[in-house]
Length: 285
Length: 155
Image (tube, rainbow over all chains, first blue to last red; front, side, top):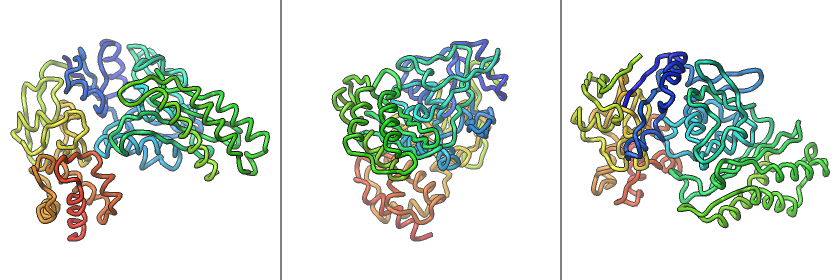
């Protein structure tokens, strides 16, 4: 095994170009588990923790551009007000020790269907910035995941950052697990409301081969809120409409039975999470 | 840029320079601390960040040493239970009876120390949240939480 420790981003990209099979490591919360438990050994490892700009965030044309190495703790502390949905999801990640090391960039790269950061990024229409020695491209998160632990990344690419607009309205996240900490989601749901654009965004986690959007549920809820003129007046939304929203979210899931839960349970739980998230978000709107 | 096989890990642990040669590239910081530096206070249990028994400070940040690659610690500064300024917390653990088998205690002491640095007078909920990544299979946690309150009270 080879251990590479680039000091700069361009050095890292050159190393990835020369060693396309290399595994990048940042916080190590996924990579180290594989190494410690000997689930296969990478040919080489590129340590990204020396590259300062990966741990930084800033503004980019009205969006937030957040370096792939920004930890959950930093995201919660510094961006929790602007990205409430992602911050809620980040608070459910592991434990303090894990949040101090783990990164959203790593969550994207691992691309587990259960990744906690994915639903809020989907709901907010975030983008992933991928870089290689030959250039940079931005991919919408909704096109990023292609299967369990599979993404559209090429082997010569690294995740530089993700981009997301500051919340334009209420956001919510909810997750089902056996306890409040240190838990892989049985299923999870994120909601982002954008009253100015009259848009509803959703993200479903851990209930399909990839994180999913519930597009039919989004259009349905937008229609209900438009019809009632509720976006502006925040009128009460009927229980029947909220229940229907939950059902449409559940039907958008593609869950399986596994060690953490059955497909039927996940579908049911998602309908509940979706109803709750909307109720909480609407109360805050 | 560091490229090569078998590593040298050169870092500061508890205020003094520690160097290990011939470290395997996939070796965790926890292994380096225990097997190469002889610091057995940080415990090796789950090796997947679940149990918190290997909690240490890495450049002042609470982390699981099992999830840090040895090479990542190069040039960094570490504080382990052996070098922690943790007497207040340790004394409270003893007085509150928060120790049974003791295996989880070093990790819990480091995590509690980190909490008290950030939040000098934590609530029950804050203590539970801060120690959520540290598993104890003996005590049922009640006396651990009491110990953290006790340590906070003597601040």
